[in-house]
Length: 446
Image 1 (cartoon, one colour):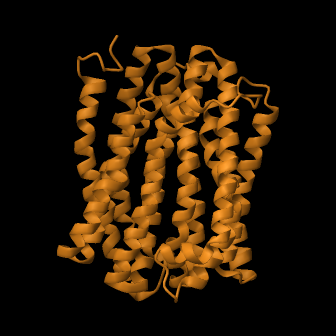
Image 2 (cartoon, rainbow, N blue to C red; image 1 turned 45 degrees about the horizontal axis):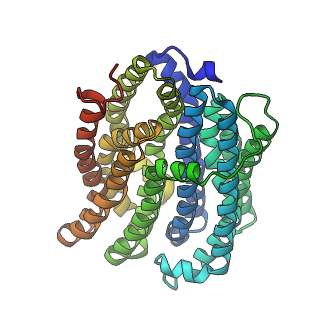
Image 3 (cartoon, rainbow, N blue to C red; image 1 turned 135 degrees about the horizontal axis):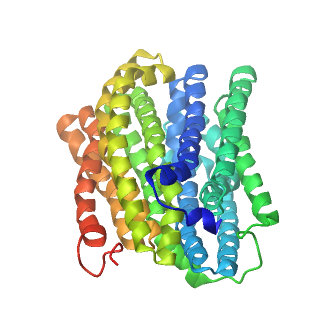
C-alpha cells in the first residue's frame, strides 16, 4: 500500500491511479440517476419532483460521511506517510464507528418526522404522499449509504481503488435491475426506487466492513480509544466536503421553492433533471480528487516537495483541459439528456433551455472542486472550506435570491454558472499564496 502511494509521479501514473475513482464516482452518479429516469418514465414527473424535494435528507447523511471520509482520509494517509501504521488503523476504526452511530440517529429522526420533514423541504399536498413514501424507505438504508461513501475513499487509501470500483459497478447493476423489477413489474412507485437504491448501497457497505475486518494489509480494523481531538481535527479538515454536500441540500430546497413559484411542478421536475446532470459531470472531478488525495496526503506526510509539485502541475492541467471538453459534451448532449428523462412537453421545454445555460458552470466547477480537495489532502481545512462554501452555498444562494427577480426563470438557470465563476476568482489568490508564491506558506517550496 505504501509503495502504491509512494509511486513515481508522471501524468500516466497519476491518472491511472485516479482512474478507478473517477469511474467509480461517475458510475455511482449514473446508478443514482437511473432511479430518476425510471421514476420519471414509469411513475411520472410529479414523482420525480417528490424525489428531488426529500433527497436533501440523504444529502445531509452523505455530507457527514464525506466529512469523515475526506478529513479522516487525510489523517490516515499522513500517518501512513510517516510510517505510523498503528495510528492509521486506530483512526480508521474510530471514524467508521462514529459514522455508524450517527447514521442510526438520522434513521430514527427521519422515520419519526416523515410528514414534518417533507413539508419543511417544500412538498405541497400533490407531492406529499410520494415524498413520504420515498423518504420512509430510503432513510432505512442511511447506514449503508454513509458507509458506502466512507469506503469509497478508504479503499483507495488501502491501495484497493479497483476493488472500490468493482463494488460500485456491482451495486449499480443491482440497483438498475431492481429499479426495473420493483418500479415497472411490481409497480411499487417511488418506494421501489428507494428500496432498489438501498439494496444496492448495502453491497459496498457490507463488503467494505468485511474487507477491513479481515484484511491482512497495513490498514484494517483494530481496537481504539476515542480521541475527540483527532475526531475534531477530521471533522474540521473535512468540513469543506461536508459544507459542500450540506449546501447542496439547502440549494436544492431553494431551487425547488424558486422553481415551484416560477413554473410549478414542471419547474421542479426540470431543475431535478439539471441537478442530475450536474451530479453526473461533477462526479468526474470529484472522482479525480478522491483518486489523487491519498497520494497528496502521503507525500505531504513524507515531506517530498518534488513529488508534490509534480502532482500539482499534472492535476490542474488535466482538470483545466477536461473542463473544456466536458462543457462541450454537456452542451452537445443537452437535448438527448433531457429526452432520456422525460417526454412531458412542459418539463422538456423548461429543462432543455435551462440545461444549455446551466452547463456553462462545468467550465469552472472542476477547478474549484479539485482546489478544495487538494487543500483538504494537505490538511488545510480552512482554505478548503472557504472554497467549498463559496461555490456551493454563498454565491449560489445569493444568485438564486437576486437573479430571478430581474431575469425570472433565466436567473435560476444562471445561478450556478455565476457562483462557480465567482468562486474561481476567490480560489486563484489561494493558489498564488500556497502553490505559486515565494512565501513560507508555499507547500511546494524546498
